[in-house]
Figure 1 (cartoon, rainbow, N blue to C red):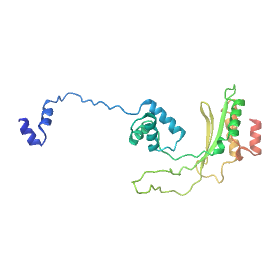
Figure 2 (figure 1 turned 180 degrees about the vertical axis):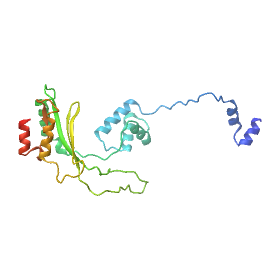
Figure 3 (figure 1 turned 90 degrees about the horizontal axis):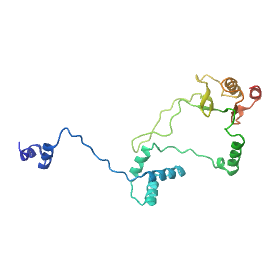
Figure 4 (figure 1 turned 180 degrees about the horizontal axis):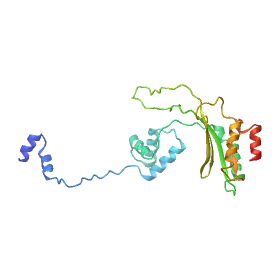
Length: 228
């Protein structure tokens, strides 16, 4: 069959027929990936930019890179880069301004200087947190123009995790109200029992650091601190 006849029979051009006839079936096709516009320096600057302002938009990132490096780049390219670096868009956690007042920062620095972690004694951090196992996420996917809905379950009692952590990782933990049968929340008594069990997991001269919430007080708690 001639190239002309094949072209008419398969409704393709003579040029395509020629390349099909002369193509090596055993040859592996390789495609050279086009070099991207975003360099390592641009990536570093973009990370600093995001770190200083987490609520920045793709448009603002685009304008920042174009102005700083005198290039043209698309929002999609930036979105792909963020995806490659596993940087995602999520709900913002608001940090009160009072947390970063100058006097409070000074107190933190003084505490670290007085009670630095470079001690001959083991430092143990202890805290507790409640969890609702049936709570839903704040964001969800849905077709454009339609709301993302979530079917809620009846409110149930929370479980509480109490944990002790060292600079090397967790050393001990307890999960309270795992069966949902407790009639009251976790209080000073439960926390005191945790500390009594913890003393056998850590060196006797360890330094235990906790916050000053009400359940870390009370007469029984004071007795435990005195005797452990």
